[in-house]
Length: 244
Image (cartoon, rainbow, N blue to C red; front, side, top):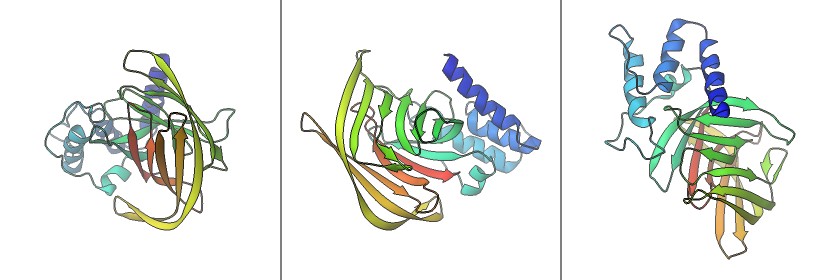
Protein backbone atom coordinates (compact mmCIF):
# COMPACT_ATOMS: atom_id res chain seq x y z
CA UNK A 1 0.00 0.00 0.00
CA UNK A 2 2.74 2.46 0.91
CA UNK A 3 4.52 1.94 -2.39
CA UNK A 4 1.28 2.40 -4.36
CA UNK A 5 0.44 5.59 -2.47
CA UNK A 6 3.95 6.90 -3.06
CA UNK A 7 3.65 6.32 -6.79
CA UNK A 8 0.30 8.11 -6.88
CA UNK A 9 1.70 11.07 -4.95
CA UNK A 10 4.72 11.25 -7.28
CA UNK A 11 2.38 11.31 -10.25
CA UNK A 12 0.02 13.88 -8.76
CA UNK A 13 2.92 16.12 -7.74
CA UNK A 14 4.21 15.99 -11.31
CA UNK A 15 0.80 17.03 -12.58
CA UNK A 16 0.57 19.89 -10.08
CA UNK A 17 3.99 21.15 -11.10
CA UNK A 18 2.86 21.82 -14.69
CA UNK A 19 2.25 25.50 -15.34
CA UNK A 20 -1.26 26.58 -16.25
CA UNK A 21 -4.72 25.40 -15.24
CA UNK A 22 -5.39 23.84 -18.65
CA UNK A 23 -2.43 21.47 -18.31
CA UNK A 24 -3.69 20.32 -14.89
CA UNK A 25 -7.20 19.76 -16.22
CA UNK A 26 -5.85 17.86 -19.22
CA UNK A 27 -3.64 15.63 -17.09
CA UNK A 28 -6.58 15.02 -14.76
CA UNK A 29 -8.70 13.92 -17.70
CA UNK A 30 -6.09 11.34 -18.62
CA UNK A 31 -5.49 10.00 -15.12
CA UNK A 32 -8.89 10.14 -13.45
CA UNK A 33 -10.73 8.24 -16.12
CA UNK A 34 -13.90 7.93 -14.09
CA UNK A 35 -14.41 11.71 -14.14
CA UNK A 36 -15.78 13.83 -16.95
CA UNK A 37 -15.12 17.44 -17.85
CA UNK A 38 -17.47 20.22 -16.86
CA UNK A 39 -19.68 22.21 -19.18
CA UNK A 40 -17.02 24.87 -19.62
CA UNK A 41 -14.18 22.46 -20.45
CA UNK A 42 -12.48 22.96 -23.80
CA UNK A 43 -13.66 20.57 -26.56
CA UNK A 44 -10.24 18.92 -26.81
CA UNK A 45 -10.26 18.16 -23.09
CA UNK A 46 -13.75 16.69 -23.27
CA UNK A 47 -12.85 14.54 -26.27
CA UNK A 48 -9.67 13.36 -24.58
CA UNK A 49 -11.52 12.52 -21.36
CA UNK A 50 -14.12 10.49 -23.25
CA UNK A 51 -11.55 8.67 -25.38
CA UNK A 52 -9.29 7.95 -22.42
CA UNK A 53 -12.23 6.72 -20.36
CA UNK A 54 -12.82 4.06 -23.01
CA UNK A 55 -9.17 3.24 -23.77
CA UNK A 56 -7.43 3.44 -20.41
CA UNK A 57 -9.85 2.78 -17.60
CA UNK A 58 -9.36 -0.84 -16.50
CA UNK A 59 -8.44 -1.94 -20.02
CA UNK A 60 -5.38 -4.06 -19.27
CA UNK A 61 -7.01 -5.83 -16.33
CA UNK A 62 -9.88 -6.88 -18.58
CA UNK A 63 -12.51 -4.50 -17.19
CA UNK A 64 -14.59 -2.22 -19.30
CA UNK A 65 -14.38 -4.25 -22.51
CA UNK A 66 -16.64 -2.66 -25.09
CA UNK A 67 -16.79 -0.93 -28.44
CA UNK A 68 -13.57 0.34 -29.99
CA UNK A 69 -12.78 3.78 -28.51
CA UNK A 70 -12.18 6.93 -30.48
CA UNK A 71 -8.46 7.40 -31.21
CA UNK A 72 -6.34 9.79 -29.16
CA UNK A 73 -3.96 11.98 -31.15
CA UNK A 74 -0.27 12.54 -30.44
CA UNK A 75 -0.98 16.25 -29.96
CA UNK A 76 -3.45 15.45 -27.18
CA UNK A 77 -0.97 13.18 -25.43
CA UNK A 78 1.93 15.62 -25.81
CA UNK A 79 -0.20 18.38 -24.27
CA UNK A 80 -0.08 16.53 -20.95
CA UNK A 81 3.67 17.07 -20.67
CA UNK A 82 4.36 13.67 -19.07
CA UNK A 83 6.06 10.58 -20.57
CA UNK A 84 3.53 8.16 -22.06
CA UNK A 85 3.85 4.53 -23.18
CA UNK A 86 1.17 2.54 -24.98
CA UNK A 87 0.94 -1.00 -23.60
CA UNK A 88 -0.92 -3.95 -25.09
CA UNK A 89 -1.49 -7.24 -23.27
CA UNK A 90 -1.67 -9.75 -26.12
CA UNK A 91 -3.34 -12.54 -24.16
CA UNK A 92 -6.21 -10.26 -23.14
CA UNK A 93 -6.28 -8.35 -26.44
CA UNK A 94 -6.41 -5.17 -24.34
CA UNK A 95 -4.54 -1.88 -24.80
CA UNK A 96 -4.03 1.21 -22.67
CA UNK A 97 -1.89 4.32 -22.40
CA UNK A 98 0.26 4.24 -19.28
CA UNK A 99 1.79 7.37 -17.77
CA UNK A 100 5.10 7.56 -15.97
CA UNK A 101 4.34 7.81 -12.27
CA UNK A 102 7.91 7.47 -11.00
CA UNK A 103 11.51 7.46 -12.25
CA UNK A 104 14.43 6.45 -10.02
CA UNK A 105 17.76 4.68 -9.85
CA UNK A 106 19.08 2.06 -7.45
CA UNK A 107 22.33 0.16 -6.97
CA UNK A 108 21.81 -1.71 -10.26
CA UNK A 109 22.58 0.15 -13.51
CA UNK A 110 19.64 1.46 -15.50
CA UNK A 111 16.77 3.92 -15.07
CA UNK A 112 13.72 2.43 -13.36
CA UNK A 113 10.40 3.80 -14.63
CA UNK A 114 7.00 2.95 -13.17
CA UNK A 115 4.18 3.21 -15.71
CA UNK A 116 0.65 3.55 -14.33
CA UNK A 117 -2.69 2.95 -16.02
CA UNK A 118 -5.31 5.69 -16.14
CA UNK A 119 -7.41 4.00 -13.44
CA UNK A 120 -4.29 3.77 -11.24
CA UNK A 121 -4.93 0.06 -10.67
CA UNK A 122 -2.18 -1.39 -12.87
CA UNK A 123 1.53 -0.68 -13.22
CA UNK A 124 4.33 -1.92 -15.43
CA UNK A 125 7.89 -1.25 -14.25
CA UNK A 126 10.84 -1.12 -16.64
CA UNK A 127 14.60 -0.78 -16.29
CA UNK A 128 16.03 1.01 -19.32
CA UNK A 129 12.89 -0.06 -21.19
CA UNK A 130 13.04 -3.74 -20.19
CA UNK A 131 10.06 -5.00 -18.16
CA UNK A 132 11.05 -6.03 -14.63
CA UNK A 133 7.70 -6.07 -12.79
CA UNK A 134 3.93 -5.77 -13.18
CA UNK A 135 1.12 -5.14 -10.71
CA UNK A 136 -2.63 -5.42 -11.14
CA UNK A 137 -2.53 -7.58 -14.28
CA UNK A 138 -3.16 -10.97 -12.64
CA UNK A 139 -0.42 -13.59 -12.21
CA UNK A 140 1.97 -10.69 -11.95
CA UNK A 141 5.68 -10.56 -12.57
CA UNK A 142 6.91 -9.70 -9.07
CA UNK A 143 10.51 -9.05 -10.08
CA UNK A 144 12.94 -9.82 -12.85
CA UNK A 145 16.73 -9.75 -12.91
CA UNK A 146 17.48 -8.98 -16.54
CA UNK A 147 20.84 -9.17 -18.34
CA UNK A 148 21.64 -5.56 -19.30
CA UNK A 149 24.84 -3.78 -20.29
CA UNK A 150 25.08 -0.14 -21.31
CA UNK A 151 21.28 -0.01 -21.54
CA UNK A 152 21.07 -2.95 -23.96
CA UNK A 153 19.46 -6.36 -23.42
CA UNK A 154 22.25 -8.93 -23.28
CA UNK A 155 22.82 -12.67 -23.35
CA UNK A 156 22.78 -14.33 -19.94
CA UNK A 157 20.41 -15.56 -17.23
CA UNK A 158 16.92 -14.08 -16.93
CA UNK A 159 15.56 -14.71 -13.43
CA UNK A 160 11.90 -14.01 -12.69
CA UNK A 161 9.60 -14.29 -9.68
CA UNK A 162 5.95 -14.88 -10.62
CA UNK A 163 2.79 -14.57 -8.51
CA UNK A 164 0.75 -17.64 -9.46
CA UNK A 165 -3.02 -18.02 -9.68
CA UNK A 166 -3.11 -19.86 -6.31
CA UNK A 167 -1.44 -16.95 -4.50
CA UNK A 168 2.03 -18.45 -4.43
CA UNK A 169 5.39 -17.26 -5.67
CA UNK A 170 7.23 -19.19 -8.34
CA UNK A 171 10.79 -18.69 -9.55
CA UNK A 172 11.81 -19.08 -13.17
CA UNK A 173 15.29 -19.04 -14.70
CA UNK A 174 15.82 -18.76 -18.44
CA UNK A 175 19.03 -18.70 -20.44
CA UNK A 176 18.98 -15.93 -23.03
CA UNK A 177 20.94 -15.21 -26.19
CA UNK A 178 20.66 -11.79 -27.84
CA UNK A 179 21.34 -10.99 -31.48
CA UNK A 180 21.34 -7.77 -33.48
CA UNK A 181 18.83 -8.15 -36.32
CA UNK A 182 19.88 -4.84 -37.89
CA UNK A 183 18.72 -1.30 -38.51
CA UNK A 184 14.99 -0.73 -38.83
CA UNK A 185 12.65 2.24 -38.75
CA UNK A 186 9.67 2.16 -36.40
CA UNK A 187 6.63 4.41 -36.30
CA UNK A 188 4.93 5.27 -33.01
CA UNK A 189 1.68 7.23 -33.27
CA UNK A 190 2.70 9.06 -36.43
CA UNK A 191 6.39 9.67 -35.59
CA UNK A 192 9.20 7.57 -37.09
CA UNK A 193 12.39 6.62 -35.24
CA UNK A 194 15.65 5.04 -36.40
CA UNK A 195 16.33 1.91 -34.35
CA UNK A 196 18.39 -1.24 -34.00
CA UNK A 197 16.28 -4.38 -33.76
CA UNK A 198 17.57 -6.62 -30.97
CA UNK A 199 16.12 -10.10 -30.50
CA UNK A 200 16.53 -12.02 -27.26
CA UNK A 201 15.70 -15.75 -27.31
CA UNK A 202 15.34 -17.34 -23.87
CA UNK A 203 15.13 -21.07 -23.11
CA UNK A 204 13.92 -22.76 -19.95
CA UNK A 205 15.14 -26.02 -18.44
CA UNK A 206 11.80 -27.61 -19.35
CA UNK A 207 12.31 -26.92 -23.05
CA UNK A 208 10.11 -23.83 -23.14
CA UNK A 209 11.20 -20.86 -25.26
CA UNK A 210 10.24 -17.19 -25.30
CA UNK A 211 11.35 -14.42 -27.63
CA UNK A 212 11.73 -10.76 -26.71
CA UNK A 213 12.13 -8.09 -29.39
CA UNK A 214 13.45 -4.57 -28.80
CA UNK A 215 13.76 -1.60 -31.16
CA UNK A 216 16.36 0.68 -29.59
CA UNK A 217 17.60 4.11 -30.63
CA UNK A 218 21.27 3.92 -31.74
CA UNK A 219 21.70 7.42 -30.30
CA UNK A 220 20.48 7.76 -26.71
CA UNK A 221 19.50 4.11 -26.22
CA UNK A 222 15.75 4.71 -25.86
CA UNK A 223 13.75 1.55 -26.47
CA UNK A 224 10.94 2.93 -28.61
CA UNK A 225 9.16 -0.33 -29.21
CA UNK A 226 9.28 -3.81 -27.73
CA UNK A 227 7.47 -7.11 -27.35
CA UNK A 228 8.38 -8.72 -24.05
CA UNK A 229 7.35 -11.83 -22.14
CA UNK A 230 6.13 -10.98 -18.64
CA UNK A 231 5.71 -14.52 -17.34
CA UNK A 232 3.37 -17.47 -18.00
CA UNK A 233 0.25 -15.72 -16.71
CA UNK A 234 0.56 -12.18 -18.08
CA UNK A 235 2.11 -13.41 -21.33
CA UNK A 236 3.51 -10.99 -23.90
CA UNK A 237 3.31 -7.22 -23.51
CA UNK A 238 3.83 -4.81 -26.40
CA UNK A 239 5.27 -1.44 -25.36
CA UNK A 240 5.35 1.63 -27.59
CA UNK A 241 7.04 4.72 -26.18
CA UNK A 242 4.97 7.69 -27.34
CA UNK A 243 6.69 10.54 -25.47
CA UNK A 244 9.83 10.90 -23.38
